[in-house]
Length: 274
View 1 (cartoon, rainbow, N blue to C red):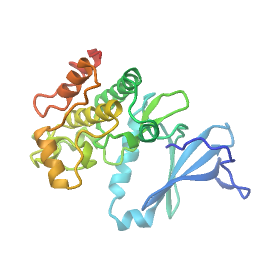
View 2 (cartoon, rainbow, N blue to C red; view 1 turned 90 degrees about the vertical axis):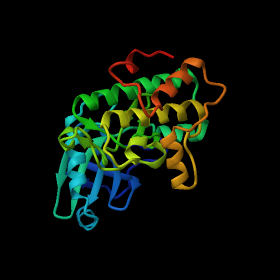
View 3 (spheres, rainbow, N blue to C red; view 1 turned 135 degrees about the horizontal axis):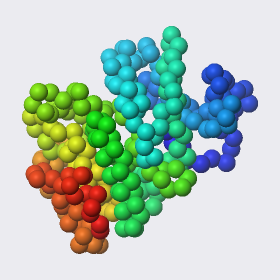
């Protein structure tokens, strides 16, 4: 989890302890969980603790989703993926201890500074490819890749976070496809919208094609206020490339944001330079 740097102390005067962790400021809060900054008092390491309200999770019927997120993150150990350290629980709360990523979301970087220079976008894109390719090799499909779920540490290393909508290979049906429609509308692949099943690897590839476009253009390739209009554009892969992109970047984005056939990670992307 992440937070932008702060000059003030992240810890209050009345310090709360959770086992070996000293809890600090709240980094974020949602409908069923909050994320706290914390310090391991034994090692001095900084961590982020996701505190999940059991009652709210049960009420929203998403306990299986939480369990799947935890199981998924335990499968993955990669420098470009937020690491899970341990999980603790009480009668009312579930505590997920995560790597603390200091630099904030990639989304915030774009919001503050606009589009990135091509070499910087290339660096983040390659890190994303490495992370997603590793996840796929472990039978994990993220299904919600977007700049808000990509965190930056103080060294400029990008880390994939939030596996709440992820799927495992064991969820694939007899037809070899996934069938649960999910993801963020602007980043979702066209085949997810057709309700005919989809390959988790190629839908992740589509999402990071949208991300690459956003990094280099500073805006979304598919963006409509009306969902039906948005989905029509996605299904047709109807988008315009900005004129300032290099020809190699334009070509790569076109090949990723192609409903069929779409470029794949193992065959093409890792060998592609632009």
